Amino acid sequence: MFDKVTATAPVLPPKPAARQGKVSIWKYFRLFKKDILSAQPAHLYRAWMAEMRTPFFRSYMCNDPELVDLVLKKRPMDFPKSERIRVGLKPLLGESVFISNGALWEHQRRIIDPAFEGGRLRTIFPAMWDCGVAAVERVQPRADGTPVEIESQTSHVAMDVIFRTLFSVPVENEIAAAAFAAFREHQQAQPVANIAAILPLPRWFPRYHSRAARRTARTIRGLIGQLTSARAKEIADGTAPDDLATKIMTTPDPENGQVFDHDEMVDQVAIFFLAGHETSAAVLAWALYLLALYPEWQEKMAHEAFVAFDPDKIYFSTLSKLRHSRAVFRETMRLYPPVPMYVREAACPETFRERSVKPGSQVILSPWHLHRHERLWDRPDEFDPGRFDTPNGKECLRSAYIPFSAGARVCPGSAFAMAEGTLLLSMLVRAFRFERVEGRDPVPVAHLTVRARDGIHLRLTPRHPPQSNEKVER
Image 1 (cartoon, rainbow, N blue to C red):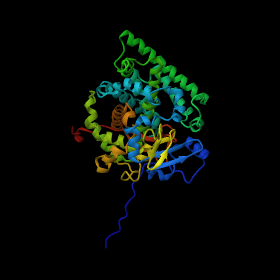
Image 2: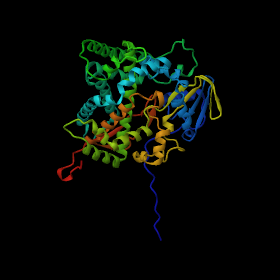
Image 3: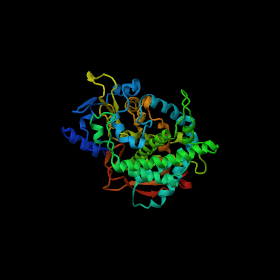
Image 4: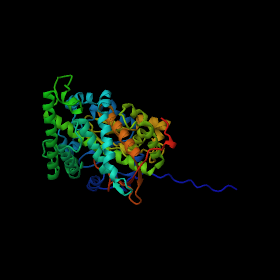
């Protein structure tokens, strides 16, 4: 007789519990304000579409890949950014490209997009490398096996990347450090969900924002303004470095010849702070936790990094050798997409899956649910960076994977973010071994981005290069 073999269930990354049962609009709003993800019912992981009716508006969450394609790629101008989301973000972002619509958005993209074209990535790569070196040096004293709150570390290095690539100054620069501190305070003071985002108020009606949110937004914009003014003078004097700020500030709109004025540039830098920093910090922290949870992938990445890196020189071609790191970063964005939901607004009458959608209705695309959809992905809640080499993974990568949005409004810095994440992840894993802290696994919560409710705590110890008798094959 054969011995009975019991299959061991795979270890699954943490996932917030779904809401149980129906709730009133006011109860939903309170849950939503606390955490976007756990406010949603479990059936959204299988539904192609879900409709929510309130006395104030109707919303439609679309998980059907054909609807996602319609909204993001085929007819994006018929589904502009929702005014309800603009309400919460405007104190900091003004009229930045992240929340603008129509002709203004098109004008902004014509100026910003050239700064992130392929060749520019090679130019700013040394700045990313310097950020990684600085991060390793900064974390080194903490790598003694005691728990480290890793989100604060990834937040620091992500902000360093923003300042070095935009303005050629490290985050330790006096103005940069002040902006970093103010931004962290603003994150706590400014929720995305507020009452003005729910009630159908006319555009002219004053919007309420907390005193702390308005104060921190003014502080951040003032500090950005100082950096922008200083750069404008350097450009006029012919002494400006060839970084992203210089490129954006000197690029005219090819259709009308206009360049960004001072306030417009402050708007755009503010969104680089919010989107570029916050999202990169979140994904990098989750990736390090997942590598601690799945040490076999961490060892693969460490070996890859020792093979790929030349410690004495900076080679842009190194990025192409970090296949495991790129796969891990991509899988992390599937499980923990940096922005969990995109909110659009129907500008004209529509029909979604035989339902009439009136103008003004909210159209919600949820990377969180789409990336874990049980009818699309194989083993959707499992961590498997190798899945993108499978037929299912390749198909879903085309139709059900939108961490940077898609179509006309795809994030202009998506290639920048992938390079940043892949490089920094490899540099950190090459330097340190990351281990879980028992009893302190993180709980995902989402406001604007998906973070851990009480932070992500990991144990770090130095990782030593292979000895000569453990030669690494290049």
